[in-house]
Image 1 (tube, rainbow over the protein chains, first blue to last red):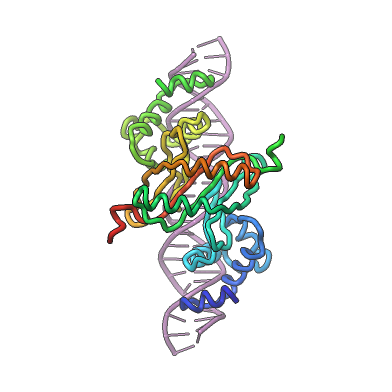
Image 2 (cartoon, rainbow over the protein chains, first blue to last red):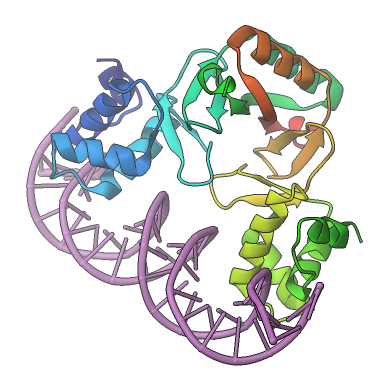
Length: 137
Length: 137
DNA sequence: ATCCCTGCAAACTATTTGCACGGGA
DNA sequence: TCCCGTGCAAATAGTTTGCAGGGAT
């Protein structure tokens, strides 16, 4: 229903591809690449075309329902948008991506405003390294 | 000579494509995409193939001489690597990418180590927004 | 003399777009 | 009924790879 409301509020139609893509995204607890999303969408409904999935992802991003990240060297990944700023922790050993929160990001935004005169809209922080599990190896 | 030393120290040969790509990168004050680098390399020596440029960029990244960033929605951009952590400020209005430094990034690294048990190797911060010039519009 | 690098061309992956039809409002 | 959104297929863009010859060491 969150999806339906967001779509209607902006004059967009509620269609099956949009619902299925949204279900796939909200039904996953991790980042998904476009090809992965396309695959999962196909499992639920093989008649939904890949290009439609791309178009839906673009639309959902415009509506701020999902967020695109470019974490690796390959394809973009997508996830439902979080309310607050999130830090992406990418483990170079096992490849797992986790999230982290800290008020320091807000501090950073303030510093950019004051120190560089930059009007900050969004901040993305990515850290590469070793996750707790791979750390002691 | 910095390039030559880095190459020889790791048992790699000093070749023309490697020198030209390095010259192009160090001769620019801004981020360059691979296609841009290929173009600039061609201006200096049209006989250097695009695939070689890709291979050189990959090698230089392994040697930590250059750094790859994925700032926009299109291609990766490359720049000589900086000693300290750098923040990329991407202006959504004019598209210009500038750099910013702040010790807050180190603070962030410490927080990730303590707060999330994550062994931080590198941190990338990107901020989208309005640069000082486009701000008052 | 050895074998690392390169140029070339082809393959690949991710993503975008034109078009005509069909379904949502 | 209207026209937005879709499926389809082809086009694009960026990047990677196999191979054989040439140059750096």
